[in-house]
Image (cartoon, rainbow, N blue to C red):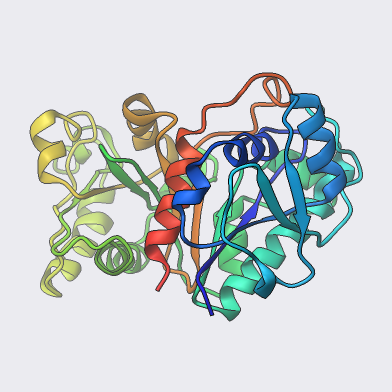
Length: 329
């Protein structure tokens, strides 16, 4: 069976749908050998194409095996659920079940078949929670649960920089207790292994950031580095993993350090992502490591103010599709 890419477009009111409609008008997908199939309701695709003034042909598949090679002007899709409200720009919690059903279908198909990769568009977490999924934290955590993966790692990647996160979407007050030696060892091992096996980096060099200012300054500004982070790094170095001891985040991104680093491990979400987004916004992607499936995503949000109006920046979705195709076995 051929390789295949599935696209779960995320929040219907956002630009996830617009991205794929605009992309399908271009010749970009023709260069992607894996057939690209959108998981979507035809009602949403057709109404959004009309609003955007895009003339496209929609082909509904009953089975994924029937997918054809990608052609400009054609959108192949498979319908899993009804989209309750296809209107752009306005959140409706009644769409939450639709978003989750589409995502679950993509995860299930990619879990069953190693030749299928999943690309995801942006979601609005608050809207999914309001729609009945109270514990929903985000794509990464949901994929971890659905694939029964013991540990997953969120990696944000661009041509200029790669950043993995030790903690993801949690309040800053909870970060410290979530930084634990055993968990960090698992994260560094996954990062090292997937940089090699999924991203083809032969001998990955990982730069580990401290949690505290100046990486704790020998315990004067916090002891997490001494008690948790550096012991975890030592255990990984003893296994032959090229990871640095905790360094201060304020000097970790200078030109010299960037050149010497294949991936950074940040202790919390906003410690390194502002740097990545300043350097690569619109070209970065999100890759889930440590799971049995290939999953990539855009690095931006739903952009409700733009949905159904302006042509969105297609840089991130293009990179996400290319990265997913490369990772397929």
